[in-house]
Amino acid sequence: QLQLVESGGGLVQPGGSLRLSCAASGFRLNYTTIGWFRQAPGKEREGISCISRSGVTTNYADSVKGRFTISRDYTKNTVYLQMNGLKAEDTAVYYCAAKYTGGSVCQLGGMTYWGKGTLVTVSS
Image: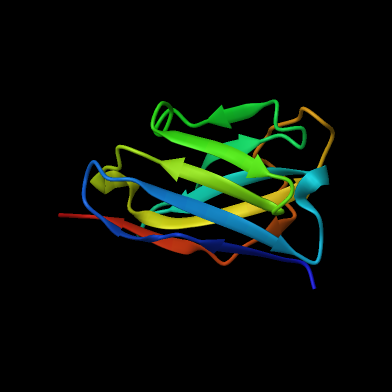
């Protein structure tokens, strides 16, 4: 069974950091573009970052640029989202998603596989 499982969410104070993980089972992430999305209460889902199959290309939404970093570990079949300088408006359920693509493609549309999400709450 093909699955993506997010972990690492939790409660953190403003200005703090969290690292989210996205682990795959049933398939290799080596051949996929991975995206991170989030959905805050009452808001539409927002694509915030992606990393290409090769790892060479990354993209970030303006809302997280300079604070979040996406990376991938091929040996662990896992993708990470390091989140620094967290703000209250970063509070959301965070999802990872994957699709099979070429080497340097990094686009958030058309994702095939989705995780169930992990909740991040930024509050004092």
